[in-house]
Each structure stands twice: as structure tokens, then as C-alpha cells.
Length: 362
Image 1 (spheres, rainbow, N blue to C red):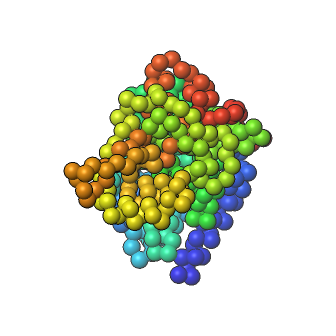
Image 2: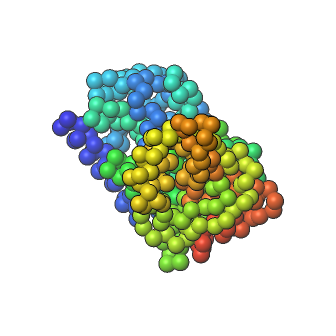
Image 3: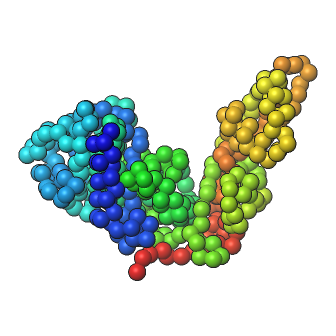
């Protein structure tokens, strides 16, 4: 345990020295560190330069040699076993650093298949668990977020709007995992990121067109630019779902998503189970409805409970929307883009009183 803590502290120190303050200096370096949690529990994987070239490096800056071929990296006994050309051995912490600006690293595993990542990859053992951290330019990370969160085949104004909110969300959330040694994770807890192997030119263009633009509120703070799949016709107030005052996250009527794939859903719930649950939670109906969604694993918290005497043991649940319902409704925004709305018009519709700022550190 002591050795693992020592290496964890060293990781935090190394990253802080290399890039300065994680919050204040992030834009000076244009660097973001993403914990690749999908890869944490995988004991063995292969690495290869998909584009450009990479080299092995220790945290102290010592270069060990180039990444040759497609070596297998195995995690065991608190370290990584690596056999790659000039470099072969065991180490608890090693980095694959790109030698060229456009380099991309291919990581292949049996469980996840093929993933491609920009920037440097840090391999470190913490408390007996292998941890991979991608260190990359923000603008190289964002296209992968768009690929994972919304996919391909949509209109450019929608992608531009989503690039702005994904960038804003990343900047506003930059300290979420500071004590873990990185800024954001690759899960829905932050934003989904599965590398850049499925990124196309359209996603790259949307990020470049909006480069460095973020949403700010009336007093100049970067907005929590929340988004969800489908609001079911009405978005929710931010303060109804989360603590804190976020006046730009106000409930609005939005019928543009009414015919989209995630607009409606149906479930049933055992009558006795629901009655027992609601007898406890009806006192605070708003929170009770939110709790019901999580307890029964329903797609959203917008639903109606009905009783059919012909089915006496269950209630029918008719729901609308998919997700928490706060901020931008993705399927509504997709439709707005198709009918001629610009990226800024889409953003103004879902976020009240916001402005655009080209965010950079002097």
C-alpha cells in the first residue's frame, strides 16, 4: 500500500510540474488528462503507432527507446511487463509519448477491440490496479467525445453546438478527478470518450470551427452545459435535479423532439412495490419522482402511472424522454439543425442568458 501511495503522489507531482496548475494553467498548455477507465481492469493489451511514431519514456524524462511493432503489455504484480525493441523490462510507471504532433496510438484488447488515442498515454499502477491516462490537446480530445456522445450523420450546426457545450462541460468539470491524477474520466460521469478511431472529417471540422469557444453565464463563469438525449417535450430546471443555482438551466417547452426515437417509453411496475415506495416519497414529490427513475431504472423522470383493473397486480408506466432532461435536448437540437437553425440559435434556445467566449489563458 505504501509503495502505491508513493507512486500516486509522484504521479500528481509529475503532472503538476509538467503542466502547471491543473485548473488555472490548463488553457495555457491546451492539455487535458483523461482517465481511461475502460482499460483499467484489462490485464493485457497491445500497442502500435497508428499514425506517426511514439517512444517509451520514464516520468523523469528519460527516454527508453522507440515503440517498435505491436508489443504486448501485461499488467502483473504491481508493474507493467513490456517487450518492445530496445526497451524491455518491468516498471510501475511508463509513458508512451508521441514524437510527432499528429501521432495516434492504437491500443488493442480482446475485451474492447481497437481503440485509437491522441497524445501521450501514461501507464501507472495504483493500489495494485493498472491505470491508463491520456494526456492530449483539448481540441484533439473533443472530436472523440462527439463521436461517442452523438455519433455520425447529423447536420453541421448540431455538431458545432455540441462541440461548444462539450468543451464548456469539460472546462467547468476540469477538477473532478484531480486526486486520481487526471482531470476527467472517459465515462458518462464526465463525458463518454472511446478514443478517436471513429472520428470523421465532419466532427473534426465542427471542433475546429468553434475552437476554444465556451458558454459563460451572466457573471462570466463557464456554464455547466448539461445535455441529454430527449426531453419528452419539456426540459427540466437544473435546480430540480442538482444542487446549486444555475439560472441558465431553465425549463423550456420543446416539441421538436416529439417524434424522435427516444420520445416515448412504456414500462410496468408491481403495484405493491410502487405503493410502498410512493407512500414514503410522496412528501417531496419532485425528489420522489427523480428517485423513482433511479430505483426502477426508467429512461427518464417524466412519466405517468395508471391502473388497469384487468391487470390488478401492476401499474402501467407511460414515460416521455430519455435522460435527466436538463439543458440541451440532443434529438430536439438535431431536428432544429435540420430545419435551418444555426449553432448559436440552438444554444440560445436551451441555455438562458448565456454568452460565447473564446476561452484562453494569457
